[in-house]
Image (cartoon, rainbow, N blue to C red):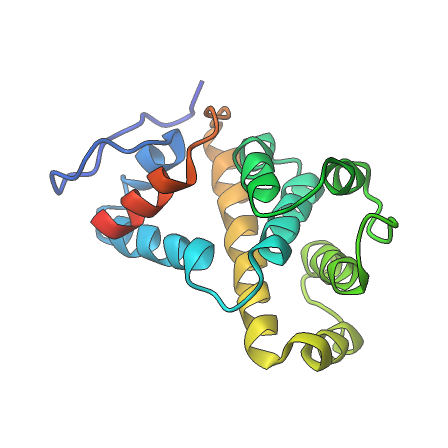
Length: 176
């Protein structure tokens, strides 16, 4: 049971499709921009969607966010994650043979960022050499956003919602 009541956006938008959205809707002036930002991270990055989703699952696994895991497991699979990759993340195996070199580096950088508060200089340099500075910054924004969301979910006691269809997320972003 949530520790705070759920609400609906006050701007007359369609009902929020997730409990998370209904919690964030309390922050009325931040709600629309937050949806747009989150939607941009999911749909408008140069970063490969598979790398993004592997990082999000890594965050969910590291911080114990079942809510995020339930939402992003199907999204990760929809953008190309294999069952072996999902299982490896769940088991904490960043260097599993199911991952290529870039994927393993993304998982290690995500782990370091979440557990130590920042990626190492070497990880940032190596990933920038492989993907370029823009994608490194996009990845760090994804990691930070989903870590913050996990903290909000845990602090407010939200239970997982059934997974959304990605088009519902896009619609929520576009209506914000």
